[in-house]
Picture 1 (cartoon, rainbow, N blue to C red):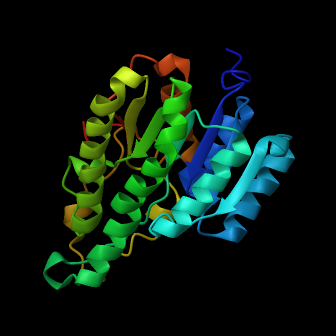
Picture 2 (picture 1 turned 45 degrees about the horizontal axis):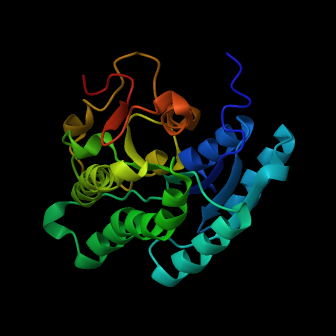
Length: 257
């Protein structure tokens, strides 16, 4: 199937576009014809994304903006500029997020608030900023990032799991609230994906390895790459996903069957 034009005339904003799944999503949507604004807190990361798009011959449809999703002013200015530059917005992908781990009994409030601020509050702030433009199209799509940790026990990740469960609930509410205005809202719930985030999850040195033994994909192929999730996002955000809203798609190679 030729997918090079599936997103022709679509305009997308992707947070976390400077690395990992966010970057893979930027490149996938560009490959399929979209005009994309990639946002990230890391300017060097965004430059690397641009270089990859240049190599693929799609950089002419890419704009970048440095944006801290946990900062209200940064989101207002950055998202506003991105949408203005695109001339509107059809797709929002809230891929920005952080993962860190700790024993819950010794977890500090600062640790908790940092993860909540980026993952959950950041998803809200960017979505709120993008909603007017998304609703104006009558076909807007929001793709949020949950995680398998939202529904399955992942030790040492209580703060992270709480944000991902919150994002799922937020997405359900958003889908219901704006369904009659043509907006769809969905989640992807990745697990067993090889990315910068999962390579350095900050696990405690005195962890119990037995508690983590179950976190292996059943397919026997090892962890998948970020492009696996990007492909699913492209389906959900396109007309191929037109009858999917208010739910999440688990992408984990059967880790949690």
